[in-house]
Length: 200
Image (spheres, helix red, strand yellow):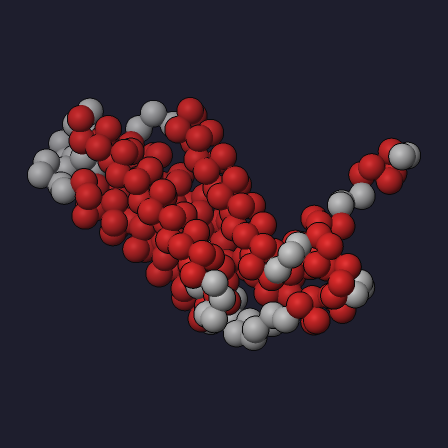
């Protein structure tokens, strides 16, 4: 295999990229394997040689979301020591990821999963549960270090931060990708930061 050939994305990777593109270009529409095969430029049979079902294709995109987000969160935890800064960077990361991956964001919003297998919806639930747990751990460490406002409840606070992430993502999808999840985020974070951090 030449270097040029080895640099080409695999057919499996190409299918996932085209699926993400179709999700972005057809907001609110159901993606069919026939339409996806046409967009990739292969037969449905060829599509199924790489993925046994559409659910498996969606799972491939969910795995990409998980690996991307939580891999970068680990770097944030290494680079940032303050709970407030960690919370800000984690939320900014997820909203930025959504803005750059509009089609994939439909998976996070769940609209494209209507009528799909329960397993896929469970995977998205698990993603958000894991994200909330991460935020809770960050805030709990901040509480122990005296960074958070006295008496601030860690569990409800982490859930509030998660709800804001989910809300911004859902607004983005509902608007047909017109309202960026990053719009007004700087001002919104300033409000949240004021609620979270201890006052001198």
